[in-house]
Each structure stands twice: as C-alpha cells, then as structure tokens.
Image (cartoon, rainbow, N blue to C red; front, side, top):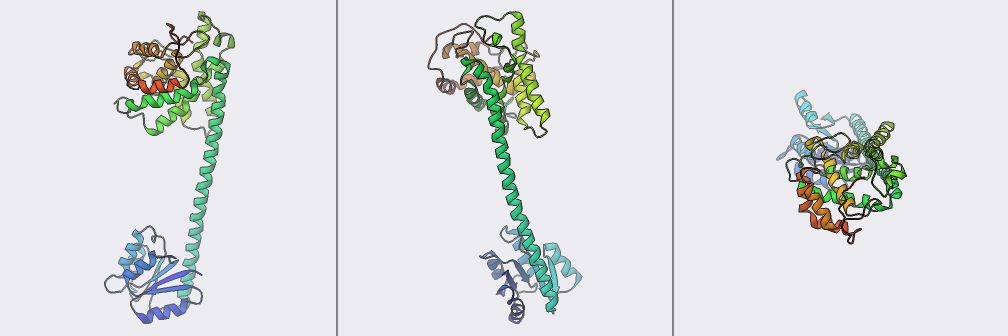
Length: 368
C-alpha cells in the first residue's frame, strides 16, 4: 500500500485524516515541521505528504522549501491541507512546488479523490523514471556494441596494410603509444594545449589506426619493391594519402551516424606526409597550416619506420633514429613536436623495445 505522511500540529486533525486514509494506505503522522523533514528522509519514504501550513516554529511553506532542496525528498508530491484558503495562500503554496491545495474543513470525498489522483501521477512518474533509466542503459549498451563493432572493423581494415607488408608488423600497435607520449609535454605548450584535451587525444589515438589505410590502394609491385622507386612509382605511392582520405570520406557519407573521430582520421590520413617547411605532400602545407594531429603522426610514423626493417631498407638503431628526427627539427617536423619527442626519449625507447631489441645502422630515410 502507498505510504502517506500527514503533518499537522493539531492532534484532532491528525486523528481525522488518519482514520480517513488508513483503510487504503500506510499512514504516518507527525506534529511538527522538524519531525516531518526527518520522516520524509526515513525509509520507506512517503509516496505523498499532506502538509498543514500554520504550525509553530516551522510553517508548512518552510517545510516544503526544505523538502525541495533535498534530492531524496524533492520529488515527493505535497498537498497542502490548511485553513488558509485565500488565493494568495494557494498561489504561494503552488509556486513553492505543492501539487495541490485543499482547504479546511475538508470534504472527505474531495480529499480522497485528490489523494488518489496524485498517488497515481506519482506512480506514473516513477515508472517513467525507471523506463528512462532502462532506456539510457540500453542506449549505452548499444552504443558500446556499436563502438566495439566499429573498432573491430577499423582494426581489421587497417591491418590489411600490415598483412601486405610484413615489415610493418606491430607498427599500428606502437603508434598510439608514441602519440600519447608526445602529448605529455605538448599539453603544456601554448600551440597545443587547446587541442590536446582528453577527448581529442583519445580521438587522435583511435583515428591513428586508419592513417595509412590508403596503402591498400598501392599495388604490391610498388609497395613491396625492395629497390628505389622510379618517379612514376613514387607518384603512385604518394597518392595513398588522398586514397586514404577518400576512403574514409566515402564511409562517412554512407553512414549519417558516422563517428566524429572520422574527421580527424581524414586529416591524419591526408596530411601525415606534410613537412614543416612546406616541401611535403600532398598539398605542400607548411607550419601551422598542417593539422596538429598530422604533425604528431608525422613524427611517430617516421621514427617507427626508421628503426624498423622494411623491404626497401634495413632498420636504423634507436640512436640513429633519434639523430635523424633531431636533424629534421624545423624542416621536416614541427620544432615543438621534436622537442616533445626528445623530452620523452625514455618512453619512446620503452615503446620501441617491445618490438625492436636493437638494429643495424642505416643511412636511409623513409622513402615510401
């Protein structure tokens, strides 16, 4: 049965209301505002409160104000039952949040009808809240499933490039770690701090899986060629940046619900071979024209390629890779990103050691 809390400083009024309500409800009666506040907080909480206004020490208006400020009691419906029957009194009570206003002397049939109505409304509100919670849970579950499916699909697609080129095994697993490491000092840099929020960094890390997806469109005879590429082959290889951007863009257009990280994925796929001095490809962007995400990816990609064996070159040692990146400061790479790299060398060494125990020297730069 529903629980009703009756609050009135007159014992006779409490007795009358209790007798009227008790056959169909669990009735709790108190004679002061302070006791009403304690009773409203106790378990089980009342489903409805019948509240007098004129009481000593704390009147009904103040009781209602305090009930509404507490999350545990704010949603309990309150009906004022009072001898104050002016329009001003009723307006004040309703403005404070009372759901109804019944004037004394009460008419039992009217009071019972009001009580039933507001108990039913309260029950409906509870059901709606419960359904909202269930709906939010279901939406969250489906989003998680959708995110998992997207991630699996993205990883599967991205790993096609690794499968075609045995020399890049593990590359896509190391790149996110390099990016997170670079972000540590860059977050305090004035040119990067606004970009490297937690959300943006997570988006960059997630989108990094797709940065080289365009290489799926480069023929094996070029991608796996052990020697130097001729000019025509080099132009085909450079086209992988636009191929990657276009592939992501097509996926984005086919699904209106496509996640926001695809915008960053397009930037990274298209511009990770741009150079700080403007001599890179495909658009010859320079300095801050290059998206921050692509500037960070450029260093992470090149460094890992330098210390890895590829079909067209032997791996450089870690120290040689560091020297080459340092020499590219201000020409190939954003100086601030290089400084962050040098600040995080121990971290980069730990990440690299998961795959590279040590390699022979090589003077070759990344050419593919």
